[in-house]
Length: 297
Length: 309
Image (tube, rainbow over the protein chains, first blue to last red):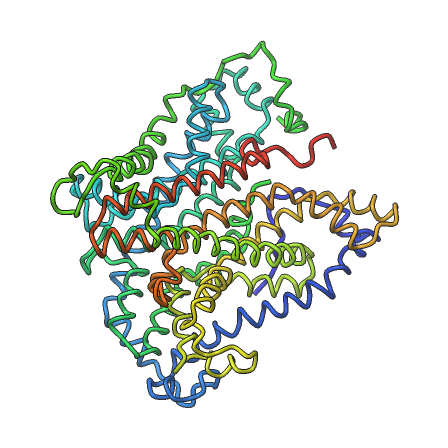
């Protein structure tokens, strides 16, 4: 596995390569304090993950009576079969549909909002931008009662759109914020040059603003997809039937379904991570840089 | 076109000659605005309306006047939930910010070992809140979990989830375990954007590593700290999934934070009018906190920390 955390979009820093005294000295400061702290954190991260995987391979009586830190004496995949036989693939495809659809809606709707917010000076667009800014603070939990009412009245209760639409709406504020942040960095002169060439606003969006905002767009896509993938409250309140069950809700149901069959519960958790872990292995750089971008500049 | 990319920050120097040529119509933003309004702003308005109603979720809502609000201000359960939310948010912030800041600044270094550790630190972020809450629910089971082995080493009672302080601290820890990688990343990104020149200048002036950290790194990360804090605070006001799965608001009502109280009131006792009042209060608190943070930091206008350099 090649490891390189250098962000693709950051300006090159030749100074870093030559490691002048300043940089070298700065590097040293972290070693005793933060270095020790990072090792402590490493243990805190590794132990739960190790137990997760090792116990999921145990037979039930070994997991319940044995030492949970020990390696499984007689590893089994039986727990995984139990989970896979409990409608896991339906949940997986539902979750994938929710994540993809949510991300698509958010991108299609947020890009024009951010573009207008950055490129026009009207009061209206300023007001809209500030509304989205405040929207960051609206907790999804707070509107769950009225959303339940709204979704029922629209006849969408217990369907995948019931999850997708509100999830997309609540991902929009952060999306608009990030996108307008990156679009603002596209220089005015470039727009002017295109305007002199007689380009329409649509062409400027398509050939200038969007290509120049690739970093922001991938940040938004990754952040939104993760949010949709992990959403729990909307599925919990707005869906019911097994055919519309997403992974998070399915996991929650396994908890009561499997009872003290802890290895099966852990196997379900492992399986729920596998797809996204696969994405992490393949596109680690994009994922990490994307999320780093949420912090803005 | 290469000449145009030289000065990205000069917005003030816009040439009047070009004026409004090539500016997009505001109407382009309408679909997005309407969509957001329909699923976020309208529900918010309905929540406020419902807070003045009695509603069981089946029959039509009937007017309740200010009954829900009078009840809210007298309700000891609401007061406890508000206090617990505040407490949980504070504990989470105090726990996560320094750790994420230190880990992030540390991870900003480009050594291979740090890159490897960073890759491992990232993993919890791949698990959903539900999965993490269930994982720790299993790990902290006093009879079967790892806690029965490890707890005693550190003097932790294996039945930590049975005590009210223990349960609250656990929820805060689990939230931290999940979101630490995210905030670490934000700080890592922020640190890498600090110009090396600043450190070189400090070096020449003879500033040591601690002074460099407190006089360069921290001030330069000001905007990053605000961004991370807003996300952290608004996020931890709503540790709903974790509470529902790990504690069900217990022991007793000792981890019943506002969102969970609202959920219980709305979807278990079907008193949706009162639940809407609790929800409205939650929005007011979250918005107030964000407004304060945004006002004090200029998060909204995305001012650069490097202004004037």
